[in-house]
Length: 189
Image (cartoon, rainbow, N blue to C red):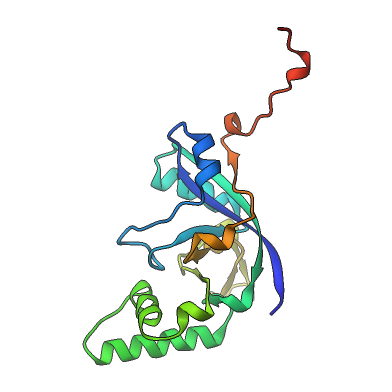
């Protein structure tokens, strides 16, 4: 697959430190309950999900930052649209379970990082959960049938290393108080 331009959004806690955030972001998640393991998490294209996460994780005191990134999808372990990646996860889960190590998604990814050439091949993991969407985000394939298309899937990227963003601008896009440009031409001294 060729490289493609994508917009990535990261929600971070608002500590009234906008300059520091834009200079030092993106920020790494090292939480023990990170779905895809430690890394730099971004919402794929959908800013409304970054706002949802900001309201949820930071109780409404958050910033949303944006990176317009050129993504080499060959270097992404894509659990959204790549059946080979999904099959490898299934095999890894089966193996870990067979040796008495029940696993999670992040556990399987960490195993692949430690035991295979995974880190040499990939810079990120892309995944989505299977949470049922709101009714307005469902489009049924056949009227009256249960299967539907989720029009607002929660898709995330987890990048392993911050260096992939060298040369990219990490910019706050919310709240507006950090995005407003002051026009100094009409000011008197």
